[in-house]
Image (cartoon, rainbow, N blue to C red; front, top):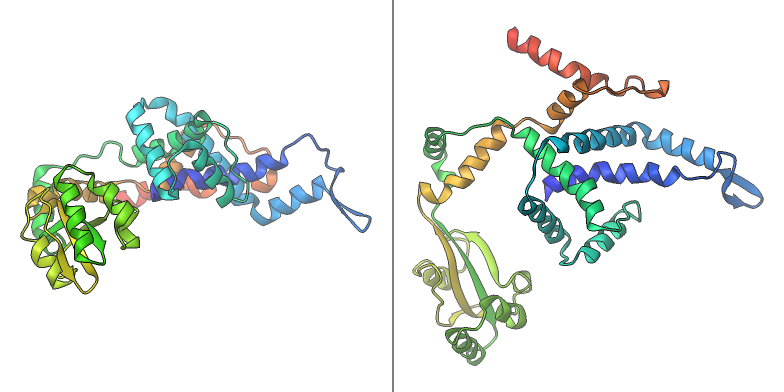
Length: 310
C-alpha cells in the first residue's frame, strides 16, 4: 500500500490547513483559558511555524498531481483496483468503513463524505504519480531473461498454498468431506481454522519454499498439483487440509515479477517527477516566508543535465 500512501500524505497535510481556513477572523478566540484567549491568528501562526513548509509543499504537490491527472484517461478498473488496495490496507470492505478508518487514523484531519471525493483527492493523484514515474519505460524480453540468470537464487522453486488447521482428525475429515462436496475452501478456513494469522485470509499462506514449513506439511504440499486438496496432514500444530493454488519453478513463472522489478529500477523517483511538474507549471508564491520553498525542485533538472554532460 505504499504507493497509495504517497497521495494520502499530501491530502493529510492539505486537510490540516483547510481546517484552519474557516470564517473566523484572526482575532477570534479558538479557546479561552482562565480568561486568556488563544486566537485564530495565533493558532494558525503556530501551525505554520511547526509544519508550514511541509504542509504547503504537500498542498502544492497534490494540486500539481490533480491538474496533471487530467492528461490521463484512467479506467474504472484501475480506479477500483486502487480503492480495493486501500481498503485491504485498512482491513475494511465498504466505503463508509474506509472513510471512518481514514478519519480515525488521522485524528479527524481527513474527513471524506463521498467516493467522488476519495477518487479526486486520493486515487487520481496516486495513479498519476505512478504513471509519471513509469512513463516511457520499456523492458525487453532479453533484459528480463538476463536479470533472471543473474539473480536466479532470488527466484527459487516455491508454491503458494492455503490451509485449514484444526485440532483433531475427526474435524479435519469432516471438513475434507465438505470440500469434496463443493464447499468453499476460504469460507471453511475463515470459520474453522485455528491458525489466526491465515484464517482471516481464507487460509492463504502466500508463497513459500520447501524449507519454510514443518517437514510433514512441506512433504505433502510440494508433491501436489495446482488446485489439488490434500487429505488431513498431521503436524505438531494439529491437522492440516492443504490446497496448492500456484507453483513457480521456471523463468516463465517469474517473468511478470521480474518485469515489475526492472520497471521500478528504471522509474523516476517521485521527487524527480515533482521537479519536472514544478518547472513546467506557473507557480507564484505570494508569501515571502516561503519564497525559496521550491528552489530545490527548480534546480534538480539543471544539476542532472550538468552531471550527464560532465
